[in-house]
Image 1 (cartoon, rainbow, N blue to C red):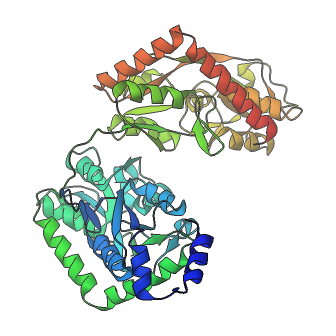
Image 2 (image 1 turned 180 degrees about the vertical axis):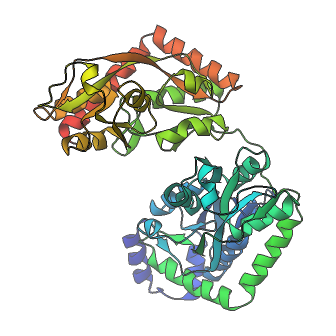
Image 3 (image 1 turned 90 degrees about the vertical axis):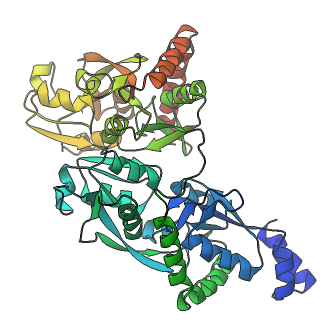
Length: 492
């Protein structure tokens, strides 16, 4: 029922603000709450079929439902999907200890602040890590989609960032030493320390102070205003403090927190989104050869596919640590990477090319020795520029567009990229950029797996062989090359 029709119906009946009537009508429409259930003590699994989640946020939304006369139903989803569901109108409220940030406020409407906490660093008890600066050389974990992960990537910038789907996975990475440290909410940290005895400690200096709020669809201001009045009462009474104390006591009495029953684990593929025809964005959707192959591999394994978008430099580390099942995005098979991960069979060979400004007079590789070179960050093209061309200076770019702009703006003297993207750039900037008639030796591309993950590798090899034999693999590359060229030529 759309909003205009609802308004018309209310006016027609003449019962716009009569509590008894509005409650009766709302009983037909549950209050849908999207939540992520590993954000203790705000929202966590109980293991009970009738009431699967509990926590401070759950107490709060149950109170909102009670006072509005609407039954509450829960959608338990990954944290980052909360904002999507609420902004699309598929959930009325989002809850899970959600930090209020300006970026999120562009997508959703936040309630008044209902709690304040802090982001802290958790390390093993005997760790040599003592403060934020010491994390620069460490492997640091945080939950995907949270402000903790944003803080890691944008401010702390450790040697390796380890994003995990749930807080339970973050904690597990600390316990088995896949991570040297983790960033999380202070109450989550206190629960972890309590549950594991003397294994961990919280570093004294907090990173930030966080304000928490519930989230609503931007158009649903009436629900948000009604909820704010209930939140204010919840805070002013003893209800908020009682809720915190109750759930901290419950969770502290559990050996490792309540868990949901075992379900089929998703097949997690980490990838970077700007490497056509392997992966690229088309009409706000991820498409490409790697996407179709990943879907087929997940189907072969009988596991749901889950894509995680990360910087290219994080792909191999995430696979190495088991935070992802497979690494994609046209990953070149090299001896160095093969020492860290296991690769599938090659599914494509790629020639690399060198782009220069149209008036450049370079004719052979030696002409580029000692020049200022650019390439995409974390790629083998970087290695080639430094070790084979002996670049005097080197610029790292996040994608080909930035690299070409660097070339046109005289930031660099040459840009190295894979042949497909180099060819597209040369065609797009005719008269300004040209591709040298020098082919750097071809590389083989494969999917990356954690060493020992033979089941997933075997599934990938089977799919690659099958699609190569029946011609589908070659057809995929033709189709996505054609599509990407159309996007670039039409500016869409």
